[in-house]
Amino acid sequence: MVRTAEVALMVGILCAVLAFGGADAGTFALVEVLLLGVSALVVASPHGFGALRRLKGFAVPAFLVAIVLLQLCPLPRFLLPLFAHPLDREPVSQRTMTLAPYDTRSQFLILLTCLAGFYLVQIIGQEKNRMRRLITFLVALGAFESIYGLIQYLTGWQMIFTYAKKYDLEEATGTYVNRNHFAGFLEMILPLALALVLYEYWKLRGNGRQSFARLKTRASRQGFPRFIFFLFVAIMLFAGLIFSRSRMGIIASAASILVFFGVASLQRKTGLLLSGVFIVLSVALAGWIGARSVVGRFENVSREYTVKNESRLSIWQGAGTLIRNHPWLGAGLGTFPIVYTEVQATFLTQFVNHAHNDYLEIASDLGIPAALCLFISILFVLARAFRDFFRKESRFERAVALGCAGSIVAILLHSLADFNLHIPANALVFSVVLGVAMSRSRENRNQGSVEVAA
Image 1 (tube, rainbow, N blue to C red):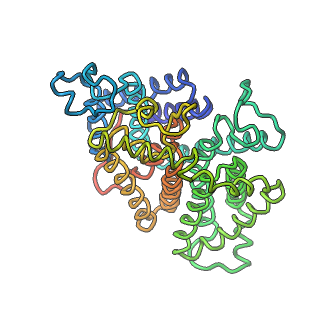
Image 2 (image 1 turned 120 degrees about the vertical axis):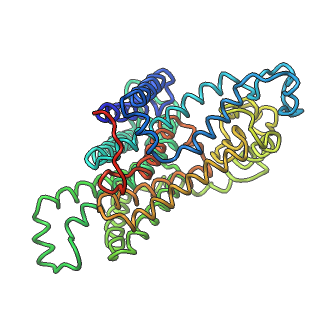
Image 3 (image 1 turned 180 degrees about the vertical axis):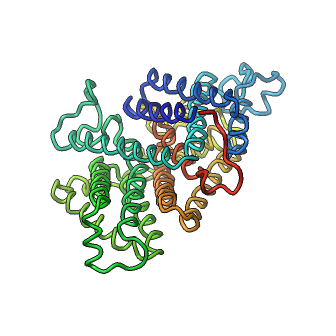
């Protein structure tokens, strides 16, 4: 059953990412059926309930699921005014707390799919070899997306398989429609690639300081080509992200890289050497391709964050109003595009489908308590990843823990100005990263191993 879960998770991530980042509803529906179905099989297996009891992180997901179910649950009419706001259209006619039940049900299925991925990866992560394959798979998928995006940027061939792109025609987007979501995916994968680079470097370096002659001898061994290969992949990932020309994506990724190498340098000053090599080669590649257009994207950044004009700040103000209108239980998961029209003061001729800030949009949809629980729990996972980097004995697990920390830092920063957590493929990948950070291999468990029927 573990093998089935492993294959299903990889296939699900692959389909979600390649199908326009999960924007193709039909394909992602198949992903939902696949992951939820496999999760049901795991639970129904002979040792399924025992396995679930030993997994980590049930309280917050259960709370989020309960909130959404409460939003969808039909309520007596006399209770509806307690949850409705005067701005809500025809609150008496509503039988549920959510203002758009269909949208809430659709987003609820995506939420359940992400939770399934979160728990499946914890089961997979009990075996090091399976975890190693999963990380390698994610890095390989990121490399494919990056190379695809670079081909789009360098050749002007702006196609996603047979689909001709209509937007972001001068940027690398891979199989994503939007450059920011493409950057969001790569910024989660890049730290995992750097984790493999760090792991291979540790294996080459061995324990303690090495003389130049000994390092030269080690460089001739089998591990050195793997080190060079993963370093090349990491540079390609960063290059693809740069030429997405996503400003917040570049900033978030740069910050996660600094965190990654900064923490790595606390032990044996490994991070200083690797960061220098990585940065020099990345800058050289970007300069060779031509980064002038990327720099130009930052020149008009001030216009994007002004209150007077149509900008993100004006949308954030409207989102703040929605949060004040529905502070405790939200307006309903996935309802932002609909309820925002009640407070919309800018972009009057356009349809605003997201708040361009995951924190505000989740608080608007689910309420302040649920949003706080979600993001505080993510910060807890981040702290756990940093702790595991310093405490775990396995070099591979330490490197992966640091890679997960870098991925979490990147997406949390990017969420300040975008909505990557509302893109199905990116939300699924982020859930997997959180699951990897929470997983523990059997070798490192102090108690009995989790049994799942093979």
